Image (cartoon, rainbow, N blue to C red; front, side, top):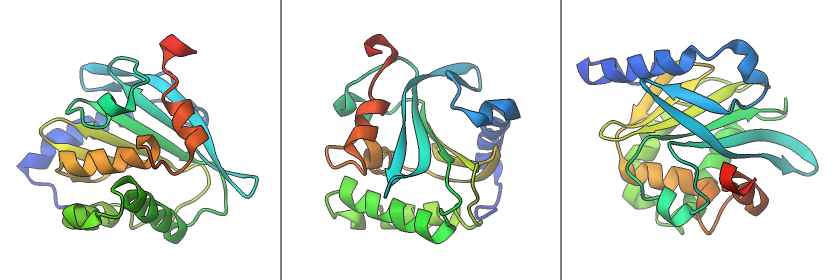
Length: 192
């Protein structure tokens, strides 16, 4: 684990355990809700990222209340999550890291200096090789930061609202990695 577990991280471990309790069968498709501690996040919208006609991953945005307003979601200091499930055997750790770094650059309009240390911490959480059907949960917890889980196991955390805003901006900013995917993730239950 890249970050050693201090007393500060014990609360995050409890959170990780709660997310890890999701049944393995749920990994096959994105569930309609995630239980985080005593709160439930609902699936706001989901979509698939494709490159060269190949499905690379599917992702879902989970919020306390459905919303299609990215301008309100991105700066919000409230519990939320993005789940990413790798759907292609062509995705490697190197390609995932490269794609996320490029997404952060687009999301911040090239101003990644402000989140340089947070990005370093984040990339330490992605040290393992990536395989088809791996599932990542990126859970933002107010006052704690973004918790990163892989297949239900805690990988670490990044204690920064600014990093959460940039990271969620990969999919939700006005410079998203994929405009169709952005639209799908912002298609709240109220608009389905």
